Image 1 (cartoon, rainbow, N blue to C red):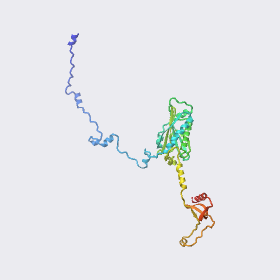
Image 2: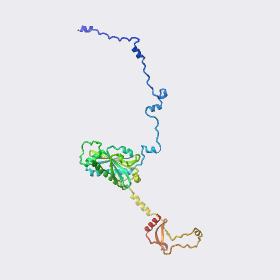
Image 3: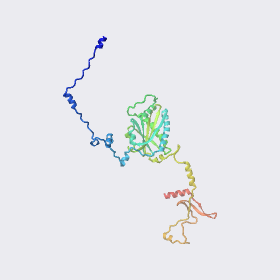
Image 4: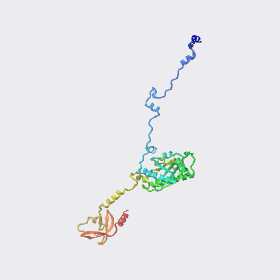
Amino acid sequence: MSDDFEDFDLPNPPAPAAAPAGDPLIDDFDDFALPEPPMAPLGGGDGRFDQSDIDALFGDFGPVAKKSGLRAMIESRVISHERLPMLEVVCDRVVRAFAGSMRNLTSDAIDVSLEEVTSTRFGEFVNRIALPAMIGVFKVKEWESYGIVTVDSGLIYAVVDALLGGRGGGQPMVIDGRAFTTIETRLVARMLELALNDFARAFEPIEPITIALERIETNPRFAAIAGTSNICATAGFRVDMDDRGGSFQLLLPYATLEPVRDKLLQRFMGEKSGRDSIWEAHMVSEVRKTNVDVDVVLGEKAMPLAALRSLEVGQTIALDRGPDDALDLACGGVRLARAQIGQRSGRVAVRLVSPVSKEAKEAKGARA
């Protein structure tokens, strides 16, 4: 077997046959010419790119026409507003007060935090409301203006679950998109009334206000209290109850805050705002030390200009007062009191015969 295996020679593979000359398939394949790829009309026909072709390739078709005038101001996305330091202080007080109110309402451990205080346009705020949600419309009676407070679905279900005896700790509720029931609306209304009352009490050091919740809507279109381009101040709050919770946002248009805008712009340190008692006492003490000129009017008489020009030394002018009549005591042209003229220690003196305050009030009323 080994000898046969050694003597066995493998045949060489056959060489490929040369294709006959003039084969039509080969000739057609060689003669087939691929068409040139189409050239884009860029570069002015010489095949080179200039800057305009590069910009068009990357989607830059030139400068966009800028808006001008009133339309540019209305449609601008940049919001120019004044920072309201006092509003941030008010919202910080709301956090502390509302946490206690919610603990009394639900008997649960409540954690309330302030997310942000910022400004936005009313239209952008409404478009960001995640539905389903509840939108409470309230009125500030002293300002005759409105504001809104929005509650997201997470906080709605958490409050309803807590007030109806739920223990929590289960799976998170699935938002099914159904309409809120009357019971759910009333329970959330109780929470909103607590939040608005706490906001009114926190605002009291600046100016006493009364806030009343008028209605609750589920469609943002029915809660339009301002134009879409109106600038509003918003404050976001986060409420956590064990493993449940959500957030609500308070919105006040700048037109609503206009009556107290100057007070919200002021900066102060400490918990008490308003007048500075130290400077007030200092001003009172300094005013009391101010020297004023007091005039005693002996009498008055109307005279023609010709008679006034003809006055001479030694001429007597008869007045409309008698020797014992009371004279007018005036300061700065305002009559303060009535007094009688006399003499004391060799000097001319007057003695008051009427209170100063009464005469001054009568003179002030007559001038007004």
